[in-house]
Structure formats: C-alpha cells, structure tokens
Length: 334
Image 1 (cartoon, rainbow, N blue to C red):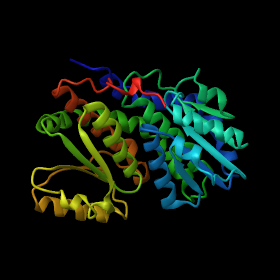
Image 2 (cartoon, rainbow, N blue to C red):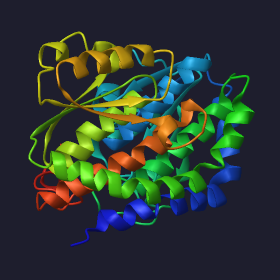
Image 3 (cartoon, rainbow, N blue to C red):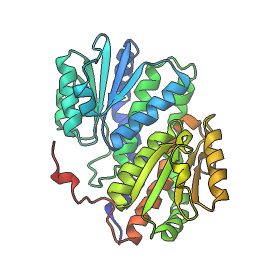
Image 4 (cartoon, rainbow, N blue to C red):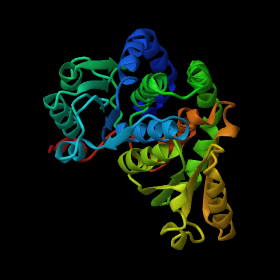
C-alpha cells in the first residue's frame, strides 16, 4: 500500500521551484527590511520550529545576525521582548497553529514588523502578519511535513542569508538554486537502501537522533514529528556535543542511534560519539552528507532530510501505520 507521504516526498523539488518562481522578488524586499533590524525573533512549533533551529545554527556559524528562537507561547509570555527595531518571523505550514498565531498577535500589538511564512493563502497568519511569504507546496495532508517543510526551510535560508553579513552569502544563495535538482537525484538513489534499513529496524521502539550545527534542527524534526508523530516510535533528539551527557549511559548493544554528519567543525564530536558507540555494538546509523551530494555543508538539511524521510516512511509501512495520519493532534486545542 502506498501512503500519501510517498507522493509528498516526490513533490519536494517542485515545491521549492514553485516557491522560488512566485516569491523570489518578494523575498528580496523582505530581506532588505530584515537587514536593517537590530534583532530578529523566529517563532514556530513542531516541524516549523525545526526549520528555525537549522537556519539559526547555520547563520550563527558565519554571520552576526542577532537571532532569538521561541515557541509561540514562550514568545507570548516573555516579559522581556525587545520591540525596538525588531522583526518577528512566524512560521506555520497551516498558518493556523494556535500558539504561533498568539505570538504573532502579540508582536503586532508591540508594533513589530511581522512576517509570516506559511503554505495556506487563506490562513489567519498570512492575513494578520504585516508581510507574508506563501510557500507553493500545494495542500499537504501528511502531518509530518515534507514538501511544506522543505519549502519553508528554503524561504528562511533565502531571506535570512540575503539579510546577513556573511561574506559568501551570494555564493551560498547561488548554490541553493541547485537544490531541487540535487534532491531529485537523492530521492531516486536513497529510497531502496533506506527501505531495507527500515525493514531491519521495524521492531525497534526507540530511536535517538543526533546532529550538530544546522543538522540539530533536522535531528529535532526527525525525532519529534517523523518518528513520534509519523512512525509512532519513541525518539529523542540531541546536539552531538551532548552525547556524553546522558545518552552515553544508554548507549548499549542494540540501541538504535542515528548520527547526522556534514563535516562541520563540531562534527569532530559527532565522529567521536560514533566511534564510541561502534565499540559497544550500538546500532549506529550514519547519514553523511558526502554520501549524497557535493554541496556547501551549511545546506546539509536540504539533502539529508530525503533519506531520513524514506527511512521513516518505510518504518511506518512495515508497522502498518500511515505516517501521515494522527491519533490526537487534531483533537487538542490550546
């Protein structure tokens, strides 16, 4: 049986291309305003929060943009929000995420320049923000967020790197144009191997997922929305540097741990954790950027997401679960 997520994975390159085609000029205008700001708040939840972690960590490796990340309610209840020459970027694939929308309304009350990034053109977030970027992924039923995730991540990288003082931002943005083609290649060549890996791991009930730099955001997404919401498996994301604090005592023979490696300077620690785990016969699964594409490692999440999606898709299928459905999420409102 083929679930909807399968087609959503295939449609990711198209979602990026359509978003670029429709929003490129608008993104340039937004970036000019961001470049004049003293502080930028990035606000989101779930998959959207993971995109924020990735772009923030990427920017902090190479630029001086002043960025803070909050979930919607953390932003709303924060008494120390600085609203002087400050921008708030609010991300939600549906544009209706309750806590993020609440944060957006507070930012508007504070007089901030607010930007929403969403995939739904009739959503409250797009209509209530002072500016908005509409991703063109078409409606996505799958709760995990595949084409909506990747087009949102692309939009964030685009507007924030253009607004940054990174001396190689033009080169990076030019390389980003190759991502749809690279993704098409990785989608084709990584499906079978991750289907086979999923079959081997189908009876496991807990997965740890680790990454450094921009890959921590991807580890967060993989654990929080892909494993737990999609495959209904227990999971925990960690920064690679935190391996020796906690997980090192649970790294035992047969425990599944996913490592993301993009050859960041901090991935020296990732590889030490892999070496230690291999010595204990941990079930290590290493997703290394160099195995899939030759691209700037700041862009690693755009590539490494694909084999992870295939792995989680088939892990769900082998367990008889639709990775795009939910049991409780739609019933809970705050």
